[in-house]
Amino acid sequence: MGRRVSRESSNKDQQPSARGEATASRPASRSNRPTLATIAAEAGVSLPTVSKVLNGRSDVAEATRRRVEHLLSAHNYLRPGRRRARRSGLIDVVINGLDSPWAVEILRGVEAECAAHGVAPVLSLPQHGDTRPASWTSLPAQHDSDGVILVTSRMDQQQRAQLERAGVALVVIDPVNMPDPDIASVGATNWAGGLAATEHLISLGHERIAVIGGPSDMLCTQARIDGYRSALERAGLPVDRNLIRYGDFRHEGGFRESYALLTSPEPPTAIFAGSDQQAMGAYEAARQAGMQIPSDVSIVGFDDLPLCQWLSPPLTSVRQPLEEMGRVAARTLLQLIDGQPLVSTRVELATELRVRLSTAPPRR
Image (cartoon, rainbow, N blue to C red; front, side, top):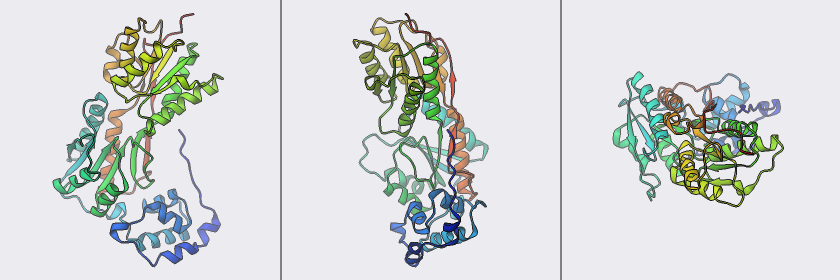
């Protein structure tokens, strides 16, 4: 996926906004610190421009830089370079659960990068249904840790404000929803992966292709299904809403949705599962429906976990560089802790389709 570049007009660079001038004299309190979106609006510039100023980038007009710097100071905004110095050599890794090989691969990368820099990760597992929205944000104070890596977990404004007030560095891996542009995040090219998986099935001759995403409100789910839609549209194939399903990224969701699809009056000839675990559920659904893989139905997964090659047949899957995602997140967090500027707050690592024996031309 291409990176969008934003350039401010010369008029904006030369003329400070009236709104910025009017509000600069009223700094926000620490309990009600504005987001960068507020500062961007007051300065009359875009969010990427404010992020460039924060990160010390040189490609910003001097007048714009002065205006943004003035507002950042007026609002007492905590910048990466002003975070507290390292204290404990510990960082918190907050993740929803370890019941997925996906999470293990991420943690493998985090641990390897931390070990290379003499830092120790502290693993925290929030309970599902926890009614205390800011509970995990108290962890840095408990451990006296230097930062937090948040893995596929939701974060509200209250939680973010608590970390910000404490000066705790934060990096999000595979954010559930679109993070603010000043929050560092690491993910994968989910749209490109969904496109590649679907184009592979189309190239084999499949026309009735189903997709099973994860939870519908997750950013990665939306991107993968958008890639699926784009592949169908490029090939001139209709997008059948009945073939678009949402699961939970787990075996159970993959089995449930796949079995419903395969036992329907018009079953698909191929299924693109939004995770390898859902693909494994689809394997069992095909078995119970009396179908063979890939002669009756082709299946593609997403993640390319190590066990894909040991399934029968070995699973075609879109590879996410999960271990590298963990490494990059830890490396980015250490940069923030040390006050080093980031080249970009958003990193997307490339996905790659790994073709194995679970896909074949449809039976005519």
